[in-house]
Length: 123
Image 1 (tube, rainbow, N blue to C red):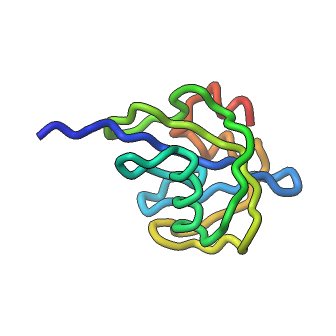
Image 2 (image 1 turned 60 degrees about the horizontal axis):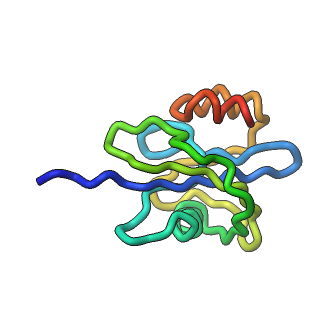
Image 3 (image 1 turned 45 degrees about the vertical axis):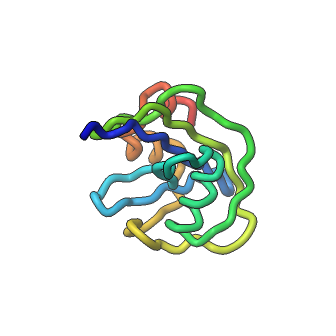
């Protein structure tokens, strides 16, 4: 049976000049977010994933990417990043997240190797 391509949504959260990045169970540093469930809108995916992974509610603002921003091992047909602001809760690693850090844009560019260069350069 053929697997359907999946959509993904991520959030770029800034605070005091730093960017929130998370380390997933595979040991990779990524922006918080993940795969959409069948029929789920990308904005809904971002909200759900941030609550599952970090226990926070966010206000999604501007969509920062209009293309496929990340390389994936599996099939993916759409992958976007939203600018977001935490509105409720303090981040705590949950689900498949091992840890998180607030890092400078320079460190984020180095650690987010799985994200396409054009997107990383805009951090």
